[in-house]
Image 1: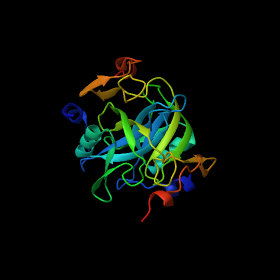
Image 2: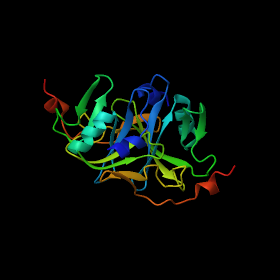
Image 3: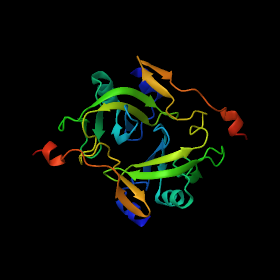
Image 4: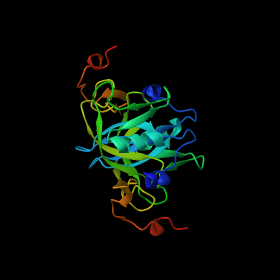
Length: 127
Length: 127
């Protein structure tokens, strides 16, 4: 853990972006922010934990939805300012019910949906 | 272009992170920052252009090395605050001569190199 942290450059808010990739098929699922403590929890538990900039709290991916991410590999880039985490994704990574948050593309001057929704978010995030 | 920009949320510096992925095999190659003008140039030329936060200038990926990135698909995430760009990568994406900037992983408490260097950076970035 210390060796990893010593190689990382956190931004002025103590955060680093983490790209989350499906370990089975290479699909990029999402990008979220981690601080040193959430990296620690991610390594300790084997499940991704992030830092919410808007809420100012930790969150474990899937803590509400059950759609957790089992960590398979943690990589860092040449500059040490971005993480790439390969995971086993349970269900949908996107809170809108898509497997990946990147379910829209820009094609021929328009935004088009390139993926099917796999779960109904209303059924996951009950109040 | 307008439709894409209207869906994006730039940060307080007018920037958005762009994840660059190899369109052929799904390998995540790098992460860099774009502003609205560099997205415009990327779409207009079909080659990735970024904004250097440290130098305060545009740069086309490969302008020095020749290792350009041909844009295949531009996707955006659910929150509109991250781009995923799939590319045809010429040579090495990493300025250190690796195909991907993510050539190191954290395994068993240590940082290990998981990729071979494919080009000698000294031969590319001549002074």
